[in-house]
Image 1 (cartoon, rainbow, N blue to C red):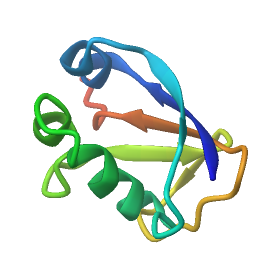
Image 2: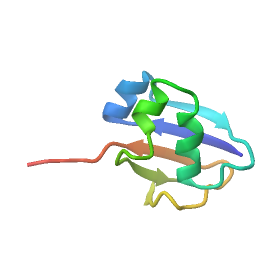
Image 3: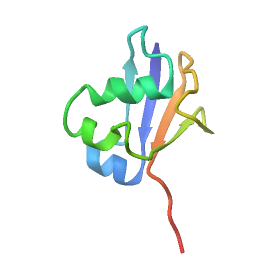
Length: 85
């Protein structure tokens, strides 16, 4: 499956890139699978996208849960939790 990835704020800084195009293997079916797949790249990926960290995700510009199924050609965006005051 082909995906366009986008990384924002501290995630972008931690990875050193704002986005990339990737093709995933067939076993990557959900947002959670994608995070695990990317974390297998090693550092800094495992540190930035570890499944224990709270990260918000959007699929085609809609906020989604980690259990959401991916679709071919989708844009997947990763955001750190937002705080404000």
